[in-house]
Length: 197
Image 1 (cartoon, rainbow, N blue to C red):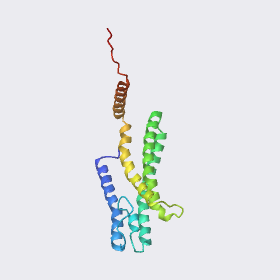
Image 2 (image 1 turned 180 degrees about the horizontal axis):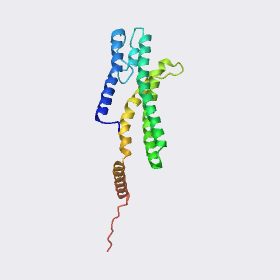
Image 3 (image 1 turned 60 degrees about the horizontal axis):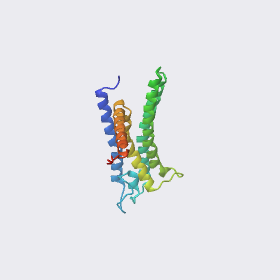
Image 4 (image 1 turned 30 degrees about the horizontal axis):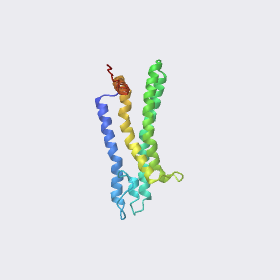
């Protein structure tokens, strides 16, 4: 009832704008306050602020602290809104009389929850390791975690939603049945008729 084209357009524009603000602040902060006087290669798959700090010969304490605070704000504010919406969904679903509807809703939310955890937990670990003395990761693991949380959820999301629709499952079932039929046809022994006189 609340979602219409105007609301959706406003939320989309807000998402795009806010996605540009945080990296813009870090980029401007780095360009004004950080001096680079050493190597110019980073140990990362893309240009990340944490990887750039390793190349700097400036005092990075204040910049690291502000970058970490901004990263936690960008991570935790949306996460808290997601948690709030999930709690609201759970409360609403628990009041539903239809057990099948409850099961469908919880299965959808459970899958989405797993993707949310795959996104937020590795990113939190990557950004928090410099501030947690008992938590250390190698540069390769940091790159791997960054790639997992950046690539896996967007790639997996369409598959999860597609596999939930009856039409897609029916098509996949027909493909699987056709593949099995072709396999059984290939595995049948070839019989050769021998004519004797």
